[in-house]
Image 1 (cartoon, chains in turn cyan, yellow):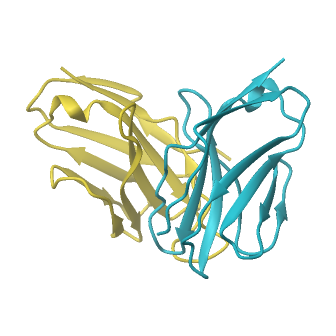
Image 2 (tube, each protein chain N blue to C red; image 1 turned 120 degrees about the vertical axis):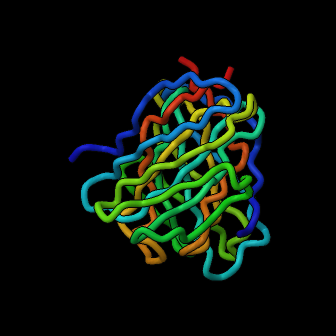
Length: 109
Length: 116
């Protein structure tokens, strides 16, 4: 599976949009981009995933560049409860989910 | 619908002992994966089971093993415990295996294992 690169941490003001970048320059054509988050001491929570097209659900939006080498997770209106570690994962169907170090997001009042 | 359940939630063992952890997936989910999480190594994949067969395996020694039953419930076993096995062990279930869009994994709360 392709590796991902994420910034180790970022801050976001409550009520503002949080844009979380992820680089996956070695992604192959049939690998999906998944995002999970882990709030302290809890199991990771699925957020969203996509292959080529941009995706949106009730939690977030996923923007994947045309060359698929990077993506951005957007939390439209960050709340204090969005403080968590966010993981970007490149996953081949039928393969392993390999979690990296993730991005620690801190939402401040 | 009930989520993924893991038992026990907390466990204390001593070096050399063995331990068995249990995971009950979400009803209808047939794939179960196990992960180890430590402060130093982060979240690491152990193995994944589907239809009672191991489908994927991470880079862990043979002391770590697992199995899945016909009702999709899964257990993992760690033999000859070492201090470094102290970790949060997470189980995740998904609807199926090897098909899209059913690969979303739903995680349980984890079992906190402490080895003394």
